[in-house]
Image (cartoon, rainbow, N blue to C red; front, top):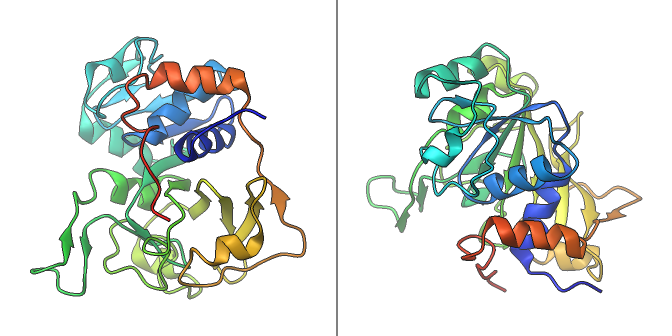
Length: 260
């Protein structure tokens, strides 16, 4: 069996969700690694979009350190700036928004702003939205990458940075004035989640090899919908790991630890 780390599993799973020919608005870090892996394997014609305004770069020079890195612009179809990038999402040209976050709740709302109930004096102040808030609002579907930890999978996020299905009520996103259909997948190192169409609650789809459903539930502060059949997550092959490690040789993102 191939030995891989938790963040390598996350990046690989994120990659296999991406379809060839689709347009993906890419966030910093693991979404970039997953997108490069997809571009080099099963989705060579994937179209990547970065906040810097680059449309369709090849990323052949390797991992950009940020969405404004010049490596995110190599061989772009065009490069027109931040406002242009978000305009494309608002006009409906982006299939997937690929983001991360510090907290996520049962309805797919994501927090990357503050931890604590006092915005002015939080327990922890986080980096904030960047472009994630607009991506979650306007891209057709949102993919969230986040480690499976109880402190992250909470009943209700402390702050909604990136909108999901809000309070879960019918028409919440429409009433909020956003155009995208909402969160689609949540990628972790131990499980893959989707969302129930009727209730908009998070739904368990797959668990990693050697992991049981109870192991997943122990790391969540709420219980997702659990279908009768829960599939096994695919594992990365040695070829997949070689590509991932070549993309992030310094282990800036793939080398992080998961809190037990």
